[in-house]
Length: 180
Image (cartoon, rainbow, N blue to C red; front, side, top):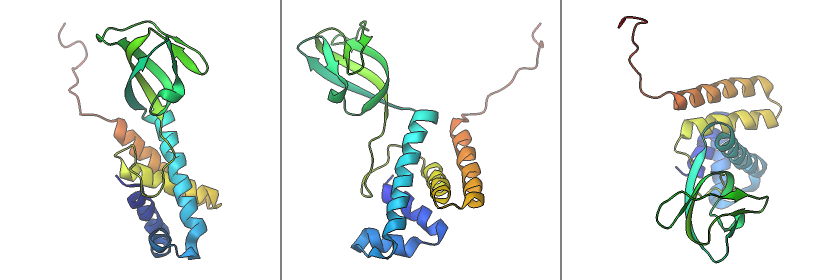
């Protein structure tokens, strides 16, 4: 999902759709502050969503000469290292340090959760949950503008969308002690 679609949808909900769209399309500076604020709010919501509710997972294959792997060598900024495997797919022991992790030398695969990079208006979101991101962006925007009542309404919708993302398929319940 494109960041532009989410930001413009949020702008439409606020009644700023035409001005924000004009800024992003042709650089009309009329609503530049609002457009940039909406984009910043989107980035905050995407990071918050990844850190607090729905972690993003990544795997990177690296070739190391020594037994140290700098975190900057990974594609994304890692939050939690979940595991390290060698070239044969076997799990290997590793130790975490502030700037690197220590494992075996050679070909390794690092599995981790990450925080998304800051997006520009033409990038793709790391999530495929447009309504969650839109409601979160609206709540963050209204809060930053001092529209507290409106922010509370959007925040409630945002939280409901997150709960909906956690709900999976319905499961069948057994009545208690029926099998005994």
